[in-house]
Length: 324
Image (cartoon, rainbow, N blue to C red):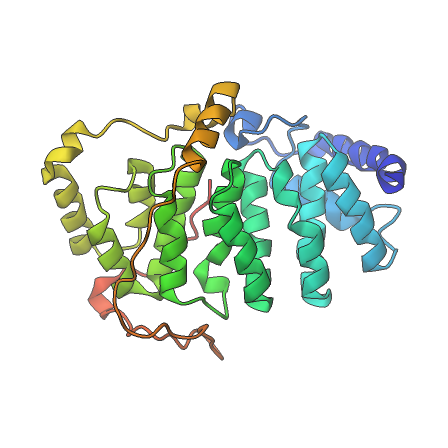
């Protein structure tokens, strides 16, 4: 912990000093909005980025040495903004650092996540590294898919793509949907948000297969996941799926589930999670018997194996949606 002991105080002092010029957030209680239990200074994202850009006394060190510093800060700090600075650093150097080095360090960071903001930044990193080493990274995502830790389960799906428009290589649709299916009945709010988010992003790449999946599982999806999953669909398809859910008799009997207020960890919820994961995961069957395509690649956008969706069948991607 020599790096933590030496630099953590400096990092906190600079972060706290920037409060004077901090722009007030549109959220009255920013800590509550983010949902973290870590100590919280209350800086806006622009203010946090400015502190990072201004640098620290160790910013002149080689990237490998700085990586050791930020790894200790992430693992030992109890301050939300200090941990966020570590995420800014790994994002900055990822294109110039060996993927295996980045992976061996950051794959352990998920164990400290307790909020959607840190989770989403890690998803961006994991999806990037999945393209570099799909075998090793995908194997870890598979292990997280059945974890008792809800933030690891969320990573197992959001970390597949994060935002599809950033990806150069995309896994086959059977692998992507095969990771989503076991979490359809997950009882954690942020896992369900991740399920819906991931289905929306898979739909951007494999529209036909995703719509088939939504048709088959329209009553298996929680309201939270369903709303996010259909967000970018064309109006006719979106309305058709909504009508199916309204008309299905089970819809009126379906209990409320995956509320945000229930997402906080507690001894009771931890016990329920362990019970849930002691059961055999849902088995997902491929949507077709055709041979599985290789990892899709592209030179400009994407050279996908699925046929493109009809022009009237989808809206333009539009403004990026926040991941919380």
